[in-house]
Image (cartoon, rainbow, N blue to C red; front, side, top):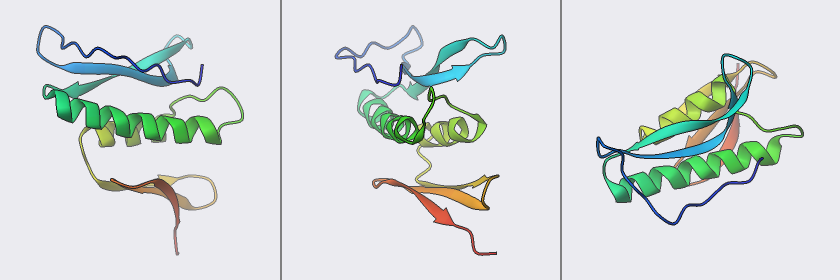
Length: 114
């Protein structure tokens, strides 16, 4: 399930929005489902946002030893990428570390100096 499905066709919905289902999460019933991201109404921007999502998901899938899923923190990161926030910190509860990403670029850990 960790693989990414690449579609060749991009079709907008009735409101002109492009969307993609990237990654997996547990819904309120505890079922494993794909998360749907709305990527905007401009096709070129939607493709760019999708590329950033796929990069993030690939990183998450590569780091996971079990079934990779979006958790609260990584889903927040993905939503920030869709909104085109180029840089953000996310505090991670274990090990007093944070995520930091700068696009274009690569996702990386940033140690927090207390």
